[in-house]
Image (tube, rainbow, N blue to C red):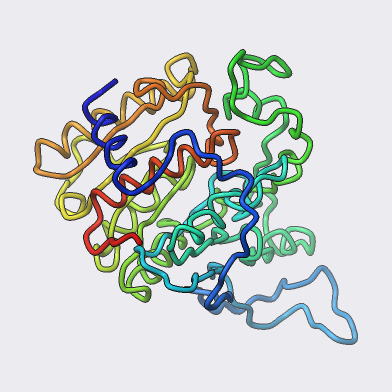
Length: 347
């Protein structure tokens, strides 16, 4: 057991967190002070290809709002923790953080129960954040060359199985996998078209996250997979309001040769599940993120790079917030926040 893990386990005892948790059977009412939703960011554009054809109610021309980010929030009664913002990854939506595929409590509700206001976003052009279809209609109407069609990606069951590390090959599971594969059909329903390749650079989600952090006056940005790099991108724009960064299995970290100045001001955790070193896709990403962590530490930054099996937590997939031990991992993460984010007080 590493010194880091011993330190956090000791902290778990201090704050009354049991590992592993028995909280999967939570039956007490959820006490919410307020909840709601709003959009952040966005811009207006005029288009002559809003529809394939006009109708009595809608014309093909007009102004629409695009690049906005949908945000849903819940604030618990007696909130006593730093706000948490949850950012989903590729081919998914904010559903990532809600009820697990097999019906257990997700991190969204669990963090609220632990005293945090929680904000869950849908990335630009995903879920309830609108996509700009003007180019597609433009091609259909013959006004736009077909080679300008935006790339729209879907992840098939077969590639997602290995990419999310449920097993080494499709339909074959790792022997100790924590992912609830008996409910895999429900997970497949969570996957949606990914429009990221059609978006401008930088991705409009990044300034929206920066704006959200400033508006909240302090939040921990938790990104996953594709969005694991997003909190860093938001911090590069402004560190205001970013109380901490948690990057869960990021597809990329800032380069080791990047300007470390913004990141030296923020406590950072990069967290990985199991079997990463056996994955041709994920092993190089882990190595690159470790190089970033070493460079940031040398620059005076406060960063923890943690691979769960190295601290005795095994079997986690890429979707560790949905794994059977998701609350065990959540409690560990909350202890990290307790220990590293200023202004945190737990009842």
